[in-house]
Image (cartoon, rainbow over the protein chains, first blue to last red):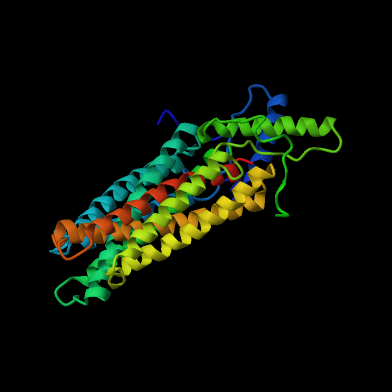
Length: 199
Length: 199
């Protein structure tokens, strides 16, 4: 954890809870204030990003990571519990992608929890870049797997009407869980990308 | 076109071709310089973003839009030329999504060409927000359609092995074209989002 640095002020003291949409102008004001402080105080404090809820190191970020993990694990477990998923490539791919999403989200949830407990900020440039790339890759894979499974499920259910000899309910539930897991990954990705661009 | 404004300097005079990755710090310096100029010159020039190639109003952006249109139109034409695509929901969805992508990319290519011809900048906050949302929606729809079609195509080809009575080659080509169209939409979306966040 050598890439994290101690918070300049405790995280729960100044909770800024505004959304990502209006953060651009505010960040520049914040930077200007910090620059002004640099002129007055010696040694200068590090320029620090605002903690928008959902970013790494915030309680909102931890909630997002835990939901991603839960829904990806549910998709993995439900799909793996059917006996005939290995016969369809898209369902095997869903299992693999949900497994990757599980591992990624669990790791980041643990890092986030550690950062919250020891009150360290994760707003380091390298760390946020790594999280952004990881979120982009895993969310794209999860979304692709969910869409492919949805295509097959709709084919079996609506087009062929052969739900009698297939586990349609399990397939559809696993696909839905994968979609929800993707929905909770996208805010993480967009917030990380936004914070990377706005510094 | 009331939302566009005349370029402060001609677009082809100062082409800044650095990538999106290193643009954050440079933008702030740019803003600071512009703010300093505001103090000296009256009337103040509008704060203007750098023209990274691929953004709206640049020749790179026009190239991206034209490729998006060509590949989406190819996917639409190839899929619609098969006789049995309406029997599969995912293929119908691919036709619809590729059609929407065609319309969106063609409109933006025309706007981009107009902006290049009359040397107007499209770096307006509202315009870039609109482009970002539109790119996000159309790229997500195109990617979802491509993944669903890929799932079905792999099912027909690999899992069932029934390419004899299906138009596998056309299905696979249309899916590939949709994927390439998505690949060219993602840079537009990321660049627009980056420029929205970095101002």
